[in-house]
Length: 104
Image (cartoon, rainbow, N blue to C red; front, side, top):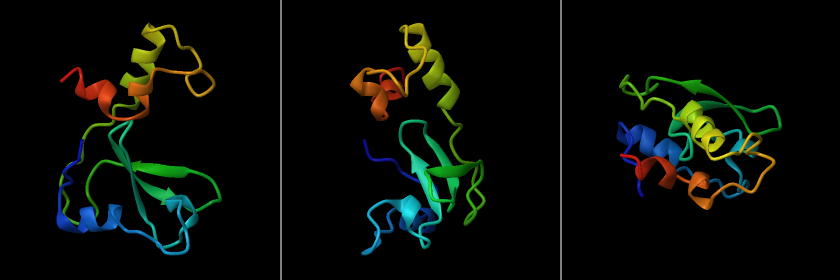
């Protein structure tokens, strides 16, 4: 599923492709990250790892961004018996937005 973001500037920022870095967390020019799994946005923390600080409003247009589904993700997996989802082989739907789009 293609996610429609709040404004063209956000779309352009999230679709930025660096010729030197395949991973957005490695690229100093990549500033905003969108997690399809958690449906959350964040400002990348360039500390050498995949860290970002969640944001709740678009820094470009001021629109309220979608509510994160991070807690729901953990709750849904726990209900299925997955206590440590990053260490377990979880259902494939939970690696994308399919897990929450089925519920809508």
